[in-house]
Image (tube, rainbow, N blue to C red):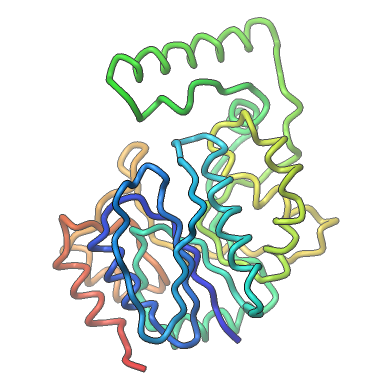
Length: 285
């Protein structure tokens, strides 16, 4: 049974090329989404895995529903092929596997029929703030001229504050679990997620970071019939403030001796680590 790797990328293309190299296995297919803001997409090739670069691209903006829309493009592209996938992995272009493909396929054989997520801490205040309030101006938080970003941030804060003052609330999706948006799912779960696209985009349209909630919203509901497991081994992802820490060669021993399957974030600034990981996990086929 084959695996599909669904990759969202917007930069770090030297790292992406190395990532494609280690995923290039006849048991895998690779689907790649480049952010619409990327003007010159790199040319990437595989020898063993099928590689499909999506023609339809989403302009992804931090915190907005555009992240969910990009994920849907990848889910739909994978399901459109006449291939049955045992497992579909949604990852970023700055992920890197810490195990061989033999090890990764064996790991998910042990989780056959289960939806593998990596839960994150949340509470009722965060869920209420992110899902039950209207979040405008997110498209400009990290893009455009500095004065535009400052005005967008100010307007977002003011409008959010007014919603609390005047008790303005949206009808929030009934969800109690927050999970990393990088997930490993069965084909049945992905088909269900795609079937609920209209409902998801409506309910999460004005949310903040809804990509961390919409998969648990759909799959962790007891009525859905899916078995969701919280698997900490899925990803090592350490944050500094609100951004993932860039891993370096100093992290190599810890990473390779750990039980984690993937690590993030790797960068061109730490290519010595990337090259060492390639040497360690790449198994010629």
